[in-house]
Image 1 (cartoon, helix red, strand yellow):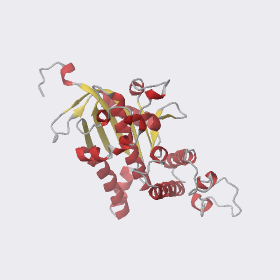
Image 2: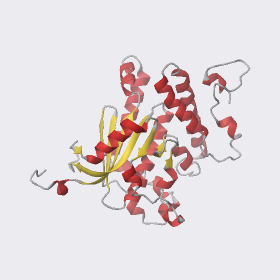
Image 3: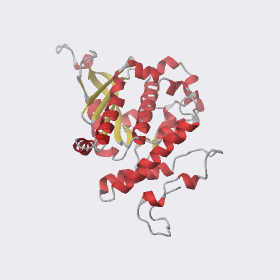
Image 4: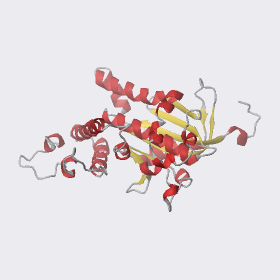
Amino acid sequence: MNIDKNPDEIYEDYMVAFIDILGFSSRVRDSIANPESFSKIDYALEAFSKLRLKTTWKENNILIEVEEDAQRRTLNDYYIDNMARCFCFSDSVIIAVKADEHVEERCSALVAILAKIGADLLARGVLIRGAISIGKMYVDQNQQSVKAFGPALIDAYKLEEEQANYPRIVLAKTLVDQLAYPIRKMEQRQPYHQYISRFDDGLAGFSQLTFLEVMQSSKAILPQKKFMELFDQIKNVIIAGLDENMNSTRVFAKYDWLKNAFNHLAIKNDQDWKDKLSRQIRDVQTLDSKHNIHYSFINEGK
């Protein structure tokens, strides 16, 4: 890097995701004696590390290609394999995508792949939290380099650290302001519109559950059997997390938030599904003839 250059010539416009793997330190300590904890750490880091490879992005182009909102446009604008960089260190992941143009298309591609990874990790008992911002960044274009810094990264880190709170990825206002809101015509819709929602606390973003909602009818991505397996795996992970963390209020609150989000998923009814109530995670305050206080027993056989 030429340090004699004007900073405006060094910094470029990037969309930056900062992701935190929750409960990482306790899992690392536990991994010495527990192979399952080691396996979860390794799987999570490998899932994000693969984003360093162009082939990973190309393989996941189908997440965009199945979207009607993208099919009406130039699909090439959604392919970001040549402009995305990923850096992993300990429990933190940074993903930087050039945002000098086609911000909406590139946001769609980034959000879709993060939602997919998030659902897969949740099904394996790994919770993540993060934030996406947009702004100035310096990213060394040498593929072997790990140099990346700038105001956009600081904004994403602070938003994740101070406000994300739950297993979700939230968007900075600076990014939301560059997206197509409010939508006044269907022609304005982009793939990210299916993922992003406004949470009760005012932040915008998506959770580790959102992939289930968006891809429930996309048989090319999630055949019905695979979808139902993923749905049940995630449900069981949340129930186990509630039971195992009753004496850890901070962790319990994250699983309780997931439980509420799970129960509000807009999953369509069809002949393969029972009624909506039977799919939900029942609360321990539900009337139970045996007076159980564990989610696993309250939900047993449901």
